[in-house]
Image (cartoon, rainbow, N blue to C red; front, side):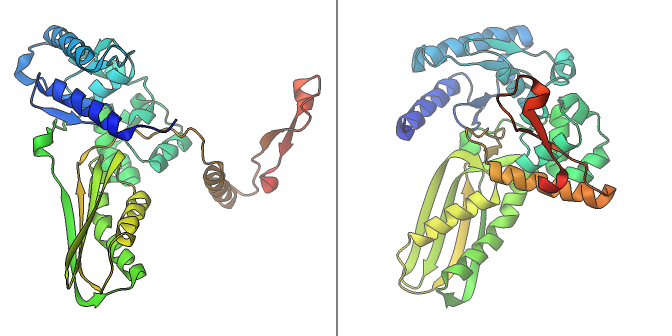
Amino acid sequence: MEADVAHCRMEFEALLQTLERTSPYVEPHGWGAAYVNLGDLVRDHADAAALCKEVGQAVRREIGEMLQPALGWNRTKFTAQAANRHTQPGHLRVVASARERAFLQPLSVTLLPLSEDALQRLGFLGLRTLGQYAALPPGAVWQQFGRAGRLAQSCARGEDRRPVIPRSQERQLSAQRHLDDPLADRAQLVALLKHLVAPLLAELRGNLQACGQIRLTVHFDHGPQEGERTLIFPTAEGRQVMLILEQLLIRMNWQRGATALEVTLARIQDAPVEQLCLIPDGTERERKLREVQRYLAARFGANRLQRAVLSQPGAPLPEWRVGWLSGEEL
């Protein structure tokens, strides 16, 4: 079924407005989720539990019983989100400060808002839980995963210090470039846009953030033209952002060469957890596995990796049904 995006946005706005009646400090987080800073409204986790139940009841009254909210509470954003993801719709999970580390340790590292490549590297290193990631030396984490990895480690340790930023205080990142001579070559303009937006996206990724809206302004001799795209899922991934910028550029009414470019990344928020694919990209996965295979072969000699294949599906015994492909045949 085709999604009714306009209706979904209306429902999400109703959710945010309902939450803002409890506290003005409400920060959207991805699609259909938000952080709420209860601040001075609560003194301890017992107060928080009572108030969160009232919030859940208000959401049901506003949006309907069909959309039951799952609520998680903690003094930090990441642990509250993890609690939210480990409770059922219509329920509340409270994680007191004294139990933060014990709660986080056995959970999967896939809760961290790291890139797909970083999560895959953690898998190659045998790091499956937040407790394992939290126990790594901070210097090694910085060396392997940079600022984003170090910030994610603080989250895994229950030390997330990121504040809740309400919509009225959302910041933007912008970059612009003035051209000495008007430029009409679209490929060169795309290359310039890539150069402009790369530092902005690097800053977002380093802060475990993403943008929910992209604006492009191109100045011509006859005046500026602007294009805008609001994203369903916030992103800081370069390939996706460049595809959107290129589409915005193509849709503009070209008459003469451009004299200036400006890119703005708006609706900045914490990066949501990586979305799972309904239909995985087998080709890309195979390519990455082959890269790992070649690396292991180069470092340790002859490649002894093998893959199980179903060679005789009708055989009566399991060991007869399965064959093996050597590393050279993978």
